Length: 158
Ligand SMILES: CC(C)(COP(=O)(O)OP(=O)(O)OC[C@H]1O[C@@H](n2cnc3c(N)ncnc32)[C@H](O)[C@@H]1OP(=O)(O)O)[C@@H](O)C(=O)NCCC(=O)NCCS
Image (cartoon, rainbow, N blue to C red):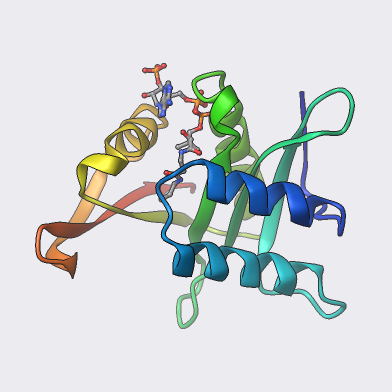
């Protein structure tokens, strides 16, 4: 398995399959994830950055997407991270997150934020962020829907 930070047109179909297969994203969220991929593949792409995990045969196993938070000097947001569900728990997510952190540091970023939902569906995801060293730094009750808090995880990269 290897990680590259170059997004290729041939990744699109595999990423679409993975974001649907993980089973936590609603159809409108899948659409937004794919809009960011399309933006990343456009000729003047400079807003979203990507890491792609692939196996020895070049098959895509997961991806992450992040970007600079507008109106901040050096804060970045991790927008999406998803791993092929048949490969969950194998360390691919941690490697994608590490690639994101390396890239953000190289761009002079000082803080990386991650938002997720407080619903039971996202319990393994929340565990993943905590294991990766991202404590919960903010919570907005009932943000997405009643009973679905927004949780912000963050880590200083300085
Ligand atoms: C969150 C996600 C990217 C993690 O990727 P991963 O490759 O499964 O994670 P890793 O193997 O690197 O890390 C494993 C850690 O994540 C957690 N974890 C999350 N989902 C897991 C799963 N299905 N199986 C095992 N561990 C899981 C565990 O805490 C585990 O740590 P531990 O083994 O020390 O207890 C992946 O599970 C995923 O695609 N989830 C669905 C999409 C999603 O929620 N994305 C984030 C939206 S905000």
